[in-house]
Structures are given as structure tokens and as C-alpha cells.
Image (cartoon, rainbow, N blue to C red; front, side):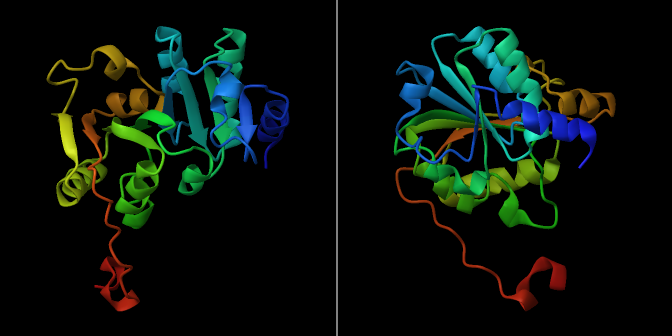
Length: 230
């Protein structure tokens, strides 16, 4: 690990707005924020641009950026501390364990912004049914999930999953900049989005909510049935 990363990992150990694998936080986020305002998660938050910017605009809501990479979390956490954004926090953990940190209905909204599309491992995509199943355990009924991505693979995969699982689409915009729809929260640009736009990539967005029925997780494929084996 490089010296810069070591410095950042050491720094977040003392940041009051960063929780690393917290043991006893489930159902107690109101104690951390010292209020009972709604909670929005930014999953695979990277540098936390969405958490910080949404926190600036909505002081009556709480925002939590979740990522495994502490050296990236450091950027957003440092900014939030500098600006005294007490409604913004960061949690370092694996998203596959997200249901261990929130009670049923404790989360009001989820943003997934430029997450890894995992081209060879669809089960790792954050809109795969196994993740939607976890979100269903922590989201309020009818809560919205926002996906913003430059990956046509992840975008199409998500639309297929939404249809298969009976999710409700609230908004679906292919090429938000080309259609002049990059306004409000969609106008927030992350580090990676700026890079993608400079490369001429299209940015797609879909907002949906989960069905009342339980999300169906597809059975694991046998090794000889996997796409890689074909």
C-alpha cells in the first residue's frame, strides 16, 4: 500500500463522520446523526460526491456514503468535516453485508452512481437480484433506487432485472445530457462522470422502487452453464 493511502487510512480512523465496520449501529443511526431525519445511502460512493452535494442541498435529510475503499472515502469525509456537514457520514464496509447495519425501513432512498458494471461477474452488480433482496430488507416501502451509469451493459441489465422482478419504474432516461435532463440531483458530476463525459460516453439513468413481493434470487449456475464456459 502506498504512503498516501496509509496516511488516508490513518486519518479516517479519527474522523467522527466515518464508521468502519461498526458493530452496534443497526437501528441506531438517529443517535449518530442526533436526529430522526430520513436516510439516503450512496452505495459504492467512491469519493462521496453525491453524499456531500446532496447533504449541502438537503440539510433536513441524512446521507451515508458506503464503500470498501477507505482512501476514497477520505476525500468526501474530509470535505464534509471541513464544511461542517453534520448530516453526511461515511461507512466503510462491504455492500453485500448492508442489511447488517440497518433495520427494516430505516433507509428512505438509495443512489448507485457509476458503480463497477462487473462485465464478467453479473452477480456482483449492485442491481443484481441478490443485492435488491438485501435492499428490500432495509428500505421503506416504495423507497426509490436511483442508478446513474455510463455502462450500457449495467443499464440494460438493470432494466431487465426490473422487469423480471416486477419493480416499478418512476423514471427512465437514456442519455440524460443529450435529452437535457441532467438537472437537479442528476446534475451532480462525480470524478468518474467527468472522465466519462470527456470520453464522449452517454450517461443513462433509471429510478425505480422494489415490489411488495419478495425479490427472487436466481439459482447459481453450474460451472458448465456459465457464460464464461460457453
